[in-house]
Image (cartoon, rainbow, N blue to C red; front, top):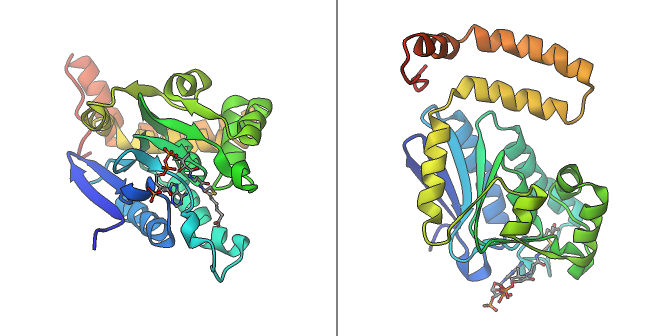
Length: 258
Ligand code: T3D
């Protein structure tokens, strides 16, 4: 039997590929729990500097596998608390950078996953749909928290109410993705981008994520205090010494293995 999640490593980049292409990578419990575990494994593996999450085939993820819902013996609340919520908490809580490489349609909880990366790279034919209202559910897996922060309350509500289809150009304009790559070279372009990110100072990026995530919910004054504390940790780290030495010696810094 094929694994619902493929894991591969190349040059410090761990790629996790959702692998249910016949269903546009719709998520069953095996995929959701496996993905959460795989993210935790990537976090603790010192060889991993960047994590890429993508999908096999023409879909990124079509959200909850609707075939699995009928006859389920858990409530929606229990199911979310057991599967999607730990996944999103784990993903957003990782110290390492996560790239969501949105290779195709991202719908429902798949759209929430697409948003959850630190960097979102889209193929030119990718689409994003807050599709929940088509089946009279509410957006979950963090979409109600993330989307209004990106596009504002009103645009978020409209996208959710009409399950509007957002294409890659619109997504770029709305701030739902950072870059669009061609369909034909998408996987290679994502890998090259991720490898560039893997060369950056990992410890400093971890602290940067910490400061940015805290800033989403705290005051300017609290952020200034946190910056002062985290800057000390950054300044005390060998990465900082290497960066300054490289500048003085007019060479490229090498932050790997520090
Ligand atoms: O705890 C809880 O359960 C609550 C959590 C909820 C989280 C959610 O994500 S709710 C939202 C669930 N997702 C959906 O409602 C999306 C359903 N899918 C679609 O509306 C369409 O498939 C798409 C708009 C995403 C793509 O349309 P299209 O025309 O490009 O592809 P398609 O032909 O509809 O789909 C291709 C195949 O994938 C097809 O299978 P078939 O007929 O070839 O055997 C289709 O049934 C299957 N598929 C797509 N999405 C799902 C799915 N199978 C199961 N579940 C899906 N979500």
